[in-house]
Length: 271
View 1 (cartoon, rainbow, N blue to C red):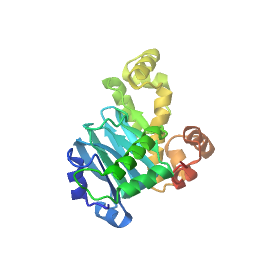
View 2: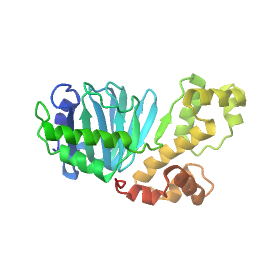
View 3: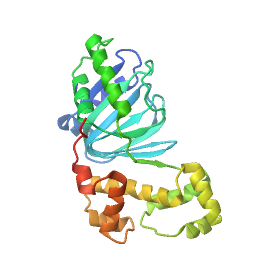
View 4: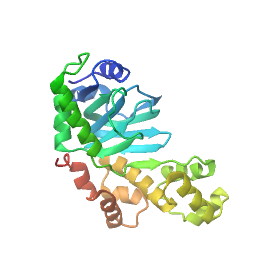
């Protein structure tokens, strides 16, 4: 079922009713969200939520970091998770709300997953249901298969964890604001009043990544945003501080298994 923003908001805050509620935002309905970037301040939902982007770009922030959702990927937001959302461009796609009352076996932290053709077909089937009080036996079976597909879907490296230490956070914010800045670990450590060894140890302790890995992930996050907006690969590579387009494309391929053009043109994964 296609839904207005008002209907979607009502569903998000509804624990009672059917265990699973699916909706679509098609290109016609998407126009009500507008073309400019929209930001929704810190909030949480009673239900767990999967949301898939088929056009546009969604950037989600939580206390654990940030996640980027380019087309044909889905984000999982557990019930009660505090987050903000930024939507760039005219977004179309779909969402699935899951009541916390069932044992769904899904992750306890937000994540991004790849979409299979089967998963997409199941969601489209579920989105045609009327929002009755309870699912019938056939709908329960569809929901069970849908949840299985969500549990087994491949996770994608689109998470950018943020450090909590104020010195590290200043460095992280500077990198996000100027991703082309190629200062060394030693230079950043001097700015923070730390030794290079201390900076390296603290960054890994707080983000589970080395500083070099975190900076690469930050650049990937910014690069995905620019590519989704239609910025040419050469311009993105230069803006992120890469010495050549081929170096950026090689890094992108190592992380996502395909070059940027194919990644954004990609359809759902085979089941």
